[in-house]
Structures are given as C-alpha cells and as structure tokens.
Length: 279
Image (cartoon, rainbow, N blue to C red; front, side, top):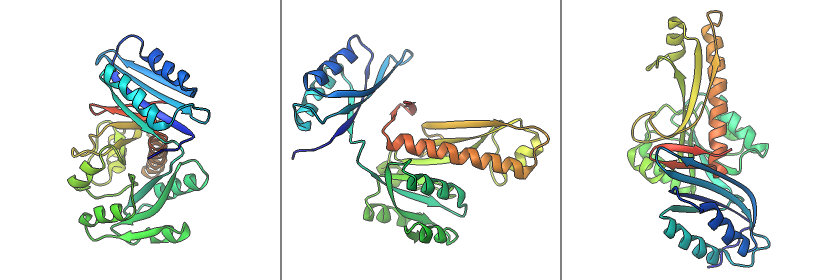
C-alpha cells in the first residue's frame, strides 16, 4: 500500500557513535527531502543518541515505503530504534475527569483555537458533573460505573491518547499495557510530598514555599511514570489556602496542556522511564 504524506517526523534512538546525523541527512538529501527542523541530544551517561527530524516530502523523488526501507537499513546498522510519524494526522483523544471542569475546559478551548492537533470525540467520567461540558462542545459523554468499561469505549472510538484531567480513579493494568506512553496524567507537586485528601491544606499548614505540578505518562506504579513537564510557583505565608489552590490548579492546567501538545506533535522520546522532550 502506498502511503502519502506531505511531511514526516523521524525519531531515532541509538548508541552514540560518529556520523549519525551525516548518514541520515545524506539519505534525505539524495531523496530530495527538505529538512524543516532537526533536534538532537546525546546522553553521555547512557551513551545514547536521540534525534527528531521534521521533513517536507512534497518534492521527494521516492515513495514513503522506499524511504522507510532506506532509513531502516541505516537504523539496523546503528542498532537503533526508529519511528516515523505523520505530523498532519490528527490523533483521537479521550479526556477523563471526575468533577473538576477547569482542566477539561482548558484543553477543549485550546483545541478549538487550533493549538492542539487532535480530535476529542469523547469525555468520560464516573460522575455526571461534567456532562454540561460535552453539550457545550458537542462531544459524546460516557458516564461509567467502573473502569472495566473503559477499554471497550476506547476501542469503539479509536482512541490514540488518553488524558486524565483530574480523573480520581486508578486505570486498570490492561489499559496501561495497551496504551503504554499514551496516557497522560497530572498531579500536584510539593516538597515534602503530601498524600491523601486536601494536599493544599496540608501544604498551607506546613508553610511550604513552593508549589507545583507534574505531567507524566501513566505506569503501573502510581505517579512514577516518565515525566513530561513540571512547573512551580513561589509562595509565602501571606497566601491563603484558596490562593494556593488557584495557583496550583493554574500550573496543573499549564503542564497538562504542554504535555499533551508535545505528545501530539511527536516531540517526546521515552527511554528507560526517562523522557527527552524536544523544543
């Protein structure tokens, strides 16, 4: 089958060695493929090389299937892991929430503004509080009784990415395995870490000076997945609990949006639970 794309994202991880960029760009040059951007990183500790290339295929003198074979030969030579992505193809995103509406509104507004390259066909919740959002944005709404219903819903709607926008339930292991590095979650970040209910109240009582948030991929270990984005804000004794909550929620929305956007734009490479997030 012939695959037609105007642009392509090439991602490669391999052991660091001499001449990697020259070999890849030489193939693209010979195929009359124009490089629009190229970003690379070398992990000196792991001796690993990472690269992301965005290229224009409009004037290519070769079909994509043939290009795939050429670069795959080089990939085998480099002992690497190669992936191709179509940057113009829109992913299908499922948003899961419990009761809080703000992070969901934020994503939907940014998607409507053209800042997120995706379709959002469904919102899922274990409550009815968020149903009004689905009506406002003309999105299908699923209220579930338990998480065992999720996989059928994802399959029915051809979901590519799952976003947990303050979804206060544990995702089943079979879904985590099927959607490896395709489930994004957010949580607050404090030092020290405050678990359980009312973390902002606990932080207020302890007099913390920094609050923050983390967006990460979901793994079987709770809140231990590869980190995508983090941010913090300085506070002091003058801030009330409500002010801390508002600041924290704002950071949560921001890091979630940045993480989702980076994923949709294929700017993330994961290796051994560590992420390389390109600009």
